[in-house]
Structure formats: structure tokens, C-alpha cells
Length: 205
Image 1 (cartoon, rainbow, N blue to C red):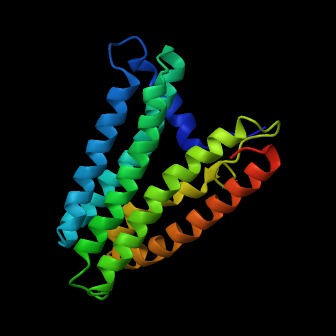
Image 2 (cartoon, rainbow, N blue to C red):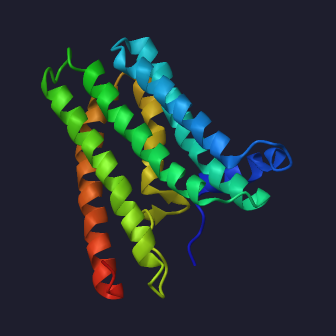
């Protein structure tokens, strides 16, 4: 039995006041995208203080990413649009993050390589959206548990993105960018391998 990560458990509690309101899960998703894009806009500025606030906003958007799903479950407002919109939100958010860091650090240590790394990270984020959709579809035909993010002690691999805020305040965001760019590529390959394994197991295409 998969244990929910700590941030999802927190979101489950914090979202309860919204259950009886007119707020729809899709509203939360769109708000989350706007928060992420605002953070990315600040990161792209290349100015240290703005990047720190941008990193905070992006970390906040990743926490809010759990709210729409929890609100949908608790209010009964689930929808196919919301299902796909949540995937799109993740792709847009992470794609914009890598692109904004590439722009923001193009005048720094990496120079023109920052743009290339940003494009590579953005491409990985977009590709991962489709791969994860494929995994979700294939897992419906699997009698076992669906594949999720690697997890340990209530923390998932994706929770590492929360480190972007303290890392930015410490002035290490450019190094985080390098590590995240490499990590995004590795994660995309890992996701692809899981999708291929699931398809072989279930006979889906």
C-alpha cells in the first residue's frame, strides 16, 4: 500500500475550507500555473533578489499542485478536463522553470550553455508529461500498483524541488539549475523505461 507523501497529507487538511465553496479544482490549477509563471518571470530577470522570490513562488506552486486533486476528491468535482489540466500544469510549470533559469543565467557562469541546458530541461519536462500520461493509461491495465515517483519516509523524488527556495536564498541557484537539468534528463529516461516495462507487461500500446 502506497503511503501518501507529507505535502499531500498537508494539502488534504488545508483544502477542507474550500470544499463547500464555489471554487472549482480547475480554478486552483489555473491559479497554480499563474503562481509558477510569476516565479519563473522573476527568475528570468537574472537579479539575485528577484530570483530568490521567484524560487519561493515556484516552490509554493509545487505545494499548491496537490490542492486541486484533493479538492476534487473531497468535493466530488472530478472531471476529465481537470485530469488533463493537472498534467498540463506540471509541464508548463517545469518547462517554464528551466527556460527561465536558462535565460536568467545566460550571462553568468554557463554563458550560452545556459540556454541549451534550459531548452533541454524544458524538452524533458514536456516529454515527461506524455510519458506519465502513458504510464497512467498503461497502469489501468496492470493488476499491480501504478508506478509513481520514487519515495522514502514520506518524501517523493519530486519533493526535491522544494529545495529551490533555500538554495536560491543561499545564492546557489545556478548550481541547482545544472543539477536539475541533468536530473530532468535522467528522470525522463527513467520514466520512459517504466512506460516500456508497463506496456510489455500489460500488452498495451
